[in-house]
Length: 279
Image 1 (tube, one colour):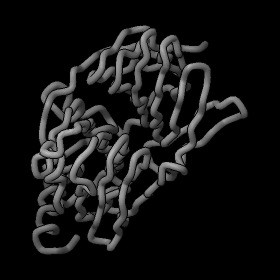
Image 2 (tube, one colour; image 1 turned 180 degrees about the horizontal axis):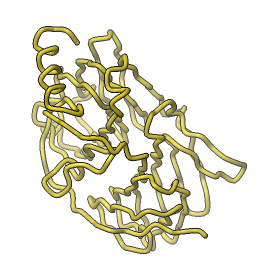
Image 3 (spheres, one colour; image 1 turned 135 degrees about the horizontal axis):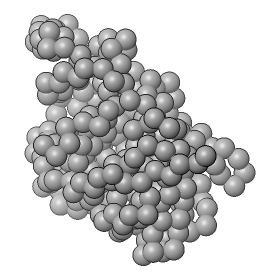
Image 4 (cartoon, one colour; image 1 turned 60 degrees about the vertical axis):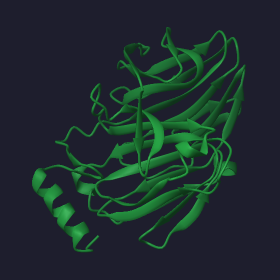
């Protein structure tokens, strides 16, 4: 029997800053909710004031998890210790698996105009925490888009049932079998998405108001979903949200700043490896 997912908790994201002073709104990774297995952090940045973003995120390390950057507007240049470099523009996605260790920077490629998007941290299971680092850099034109009745969807990861069949997102080979879609609803629009039972799932509304599982969720709010096999999004007045889901890992989490491992001893080793240049 089909089981719809409903909202179990709504959290207003809090204003925060990260990097060299980038202003953002944080929902996962706060005192309200420290983690939502397998998700460790969710930041939404969005401003037209260059003072809020111009300092960017200078070089910093990561080990033991994945970072996902989704740009809505603006340009961000990334560089890292593997020699990778590129610019993330509007609509682009970067799924970075830090694995055993990487040092990278993310700096604005603009001095004016709007900069907005998301950064999501996704945990890795113990068996993958020391894997070689890798990037999936996806240009805007490689993110499939689906137009349904009064609904526009961008498919970053997972599957969407389009008018002509199943459409797969470009992100692949991720341990948590993620779903990550951007759902823009015109007034009166609605959309129902299949979510595997057992997956942790949430929606974050970043424009307007969206009814998630029948509950109205306003801008800047995170809606955590119950278990079930599908969720319905709709909006009477128009709104936009990301819908994200992933398989829980169910392992101990030890975190210290940019390092996420399974034990404090592994954190100490990560700090030592970074300080001695052994990433």
